[in-house]
Image (tube, rainbow, N blue to C red):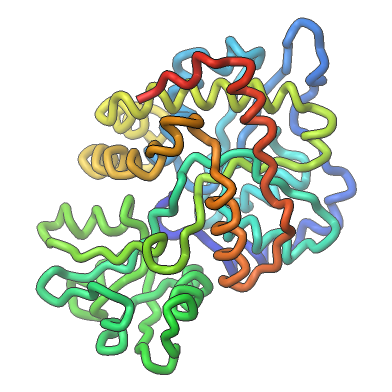
Amino acid sequence: MSTTTHTTGSKKLAAAVAVAALAVTACGNEASADDADGDFGDLEVPLSWIKTAEFAGNYFAEDNGYYEEAGFESVNLISGGPSATPSATQLATGTGLAALSNPVDTGSFIEAEGDDVDIKIIGSVFQTNAFSIFSLADNPASEPDDLTEMTVGVAPNNEGVFYAFLDANDLDPDDVEVVTAGGDASGLITGEYDAYIGYATNQAISVELDGHDLEHMMLHENGLPFAAGSIITTQETIDSDRETLKAFLEATIRGWHDALEDDDEAARITVEDHGADQGLDMEHQVVTAERQAELIADEWTAEHGLLTMSDEAITDSIESVRLVGYDVPDDLFDLSLVEEVYEENPDLMEHP
């Protein structure tokens, strides 16, 4: 779950410019999935944000040769960010076999494009999202009703999620004072606002490393239990390159096995290699890797495997996205590919 703050409204606007190009949608790989020798060509994967430890599993899969072993000749993990073309837009206009997103941003894109695109979520890195409304421990917001006595910092691209949170907890928006905030929670320290909606795996860590204790109110525990780290692709790619997608999923799972075993190494290869141009802080990335691990691996994944989702998690995610305001189809999720990967590779069940 990405970083400064993921976009929703801005991604929706950016996605709209892609309508005319959707007719030329391509899978992003030259080789066919049916190639007998398993040569799937070059692999391109647009990421949902800048290269932080959020994508450590992909880094390990590349560095340890899992993508190469799966049949890919080269790997290009395409960095996202506030100025980048949204990953769903890149995917739909021909860049990438698959991409990283989340259900809310995917819902935004689908609503912008309507029937012109058929995006599917084929796996989920995070079983639950890392969104939190956090506050300083000496002035805590411990439950939703506490916000009626506070000012809340909300970045414009998180407004949809925030107001869905209020709706899910039967709070009237008129009873909560909202302050427009930036992509970090510095205003929490300066007293500009009393609480901030952001990521427990990102903005909150920056405040904590500055020496402040925080109270967290996780959205997945308070009415918005959607998954995150969504692996998205098009129905066309599923139909034409199913084996290629499965090879990608298998290698990615192996990469996440390695990432979950070594938080320090996950942070190191992020800061020193894959995200070297981002000026990332090592301690921050170590904490990110540690904190996100419990959102990635849980009792469900221990029994069913990484990237899989329960029927309940799928239903909760769809309902949460609709609560945010996006009308997504009932069949947004297609977990059949990752299920086949585990059937064909039972050793993948052995993970941290």
